[in-house]
Length: 457
Image (cartoon, rainbow, N blue to C red; front, top):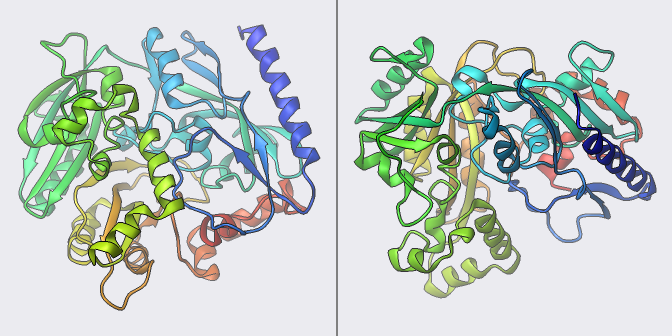
């Protein structure tokens, strides 16, 4: 049974956002106003008129049903709040993206990934139902088996250009209280990724079942696969929310134990390793930093402030350093091409560490056309690199785009992109996108996917 009070509150919030959307002038592009963001597409000032659409009352967990193993969640609910609601029932979402403030709606209309993705795919693959405010102002309930199945299937990777998720029903999976970690070192990328492929296909290692798989590339001669297994008991648990740093433990420990909640958020405290850019990994700074500030959303706000005021760029000019290019991307290539990508990336970009996360998509999700049943490897890399003399901003990112598609891969669109229009629609299936766009946003009130994700309007 649904919580009647929560559903009534949700219905009031739906009416409010529908009325607010209808009140936006036709010559203004609606933009969803969120407390936090994990996008790295920064819009320049003066990029056209935009009207903010508040979603402040659409951030709650409506209900967790421990018998049906489902959750009904408002679109702006963060995974942090969702996990806090499901874990007391011994349940979690099938895929929990790495950062606490990623919203469920954001992970479905964009893309999310984590160490269960080798088995469970991407977050949208455990969605049963979507309630969507469409571009033409309607409230649509879309499922795979109803008259709006075309919208349901096109919603992933549409980035709010077909509509906004207001309510989402997802399936949940049972968990144990602890996760046992095993870090396996390699000094050769080919051997590392072959082992990862075998583990993902068999779903076991040395006779034990495997529930989580990811890895880290620290350099050509230092790679690690990390395997996680649910456990009912633990001899101890580590804490990486204070002075100790999770990604450094991968290099020094073979075994480790975490509570399931700390495992899910193991990357958030240091934003993987990106906190080092703010000095937070220095012992003195870390000892003085309140734990409540050691979160990915705090670091993301600092990046936004630097982008606005150009503080690091001014410092580099003062020191005579070359200009820096932001290289913040997640890409997927077939796992058998993964060593080729690492070789290219190390030679041409040179940023380390690099996160590695295997995934296998199921079903037909037309706007991010991964081959069904094929094992891919996600590489995540986030930071800045110096531009070669005579090159301009975008140089490394364009190299990466070309390499990814030469290797039969795809790139997530949460960050900057440089594709020509025709190439973009070929790669992201314009033939599937435009019929759905015309059906649910015939007046073009919302930006299309190219204008939003490449042109940054």
